Length: 117
Image 1 (cartoon, helix red, strand yellow):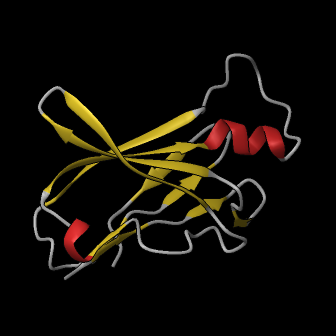
Image 2 (image 1 turned 90 degrees about the vertical axis):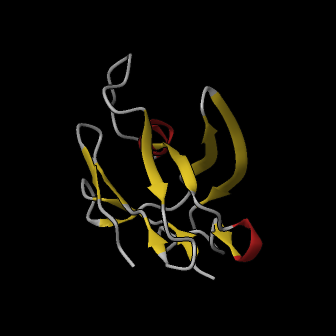
């Protein structure tokens, strides 16, 4: 079986983003179900895969990153409302036997992602 993982890079400070709160949701039509919560470690990664084994299933998902709270905790002066606050990445898992890595590269003003391995 494959696994789902993520990590967060703070390109404002050029370092991994430690302490980012993450929520993973499974989407089924109009229904949105919380699957798990995690917090990034000193390397900007979660301590364990978000999905693996029997929990790694095909479907549509959302990862929600509390980026605005992270930057506020870093002491960065942010406007209210924040420009980048909760970053939601909607993605699909078509082949649960493969590894899906969904990183977030973020600043208070921009973000990007890609499918890693």
